[in-house]
Each structure stands twice: as C-alpha cells, then as structure tokens.
Length: 82
Image (cartoon, rainbow, N blue to C red):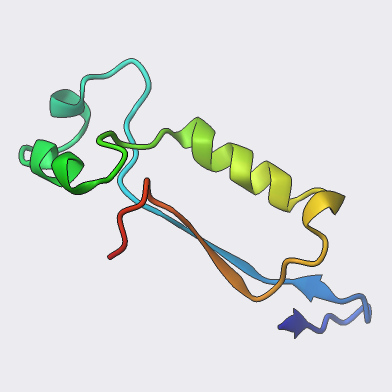
C-alpha cells in the first residue's frame, strides 16, 4: 500500500501494534491495574515490554534499512497474539 500525496512523493504506511507496556522505574502493580500479573503469565516472554523496545522498532522503520516495508502491521507483544 503506497499512499499518494499532493506532492506526488509516495509514502509508506505501517501499523505499530504493541501490548501493555511497563513504565520504567515503576513496579507493575503500581503502574498497571490489578490483574496485570495474570496477563504477564500468558505472555511467552513472561514480562511486559518497555517504551524503549517499541521506540527501537520504530527507529528501524524510519531508516533506509526498512525501505521496502510497506502496508504491514508490526506486532510488538512478546509473542502474545490477541
């Protein structure tokens, strides 16, 4: 999927789908509602992701390294598929 723009320059469209993220420096029980521990148990990596981990993927998608990626959904969820 390439989006047309008024300038005629094609743009890429990529969806970023992340799961619940932990807040750096906070305990899960403090930063997320009660019951989060049950969700974490269902995640294959047995932990929540961090905003930094999501940012690193977005950074790569903004570089020439991923110039051929388009019309994709990137799931950042520790292996948990909803």
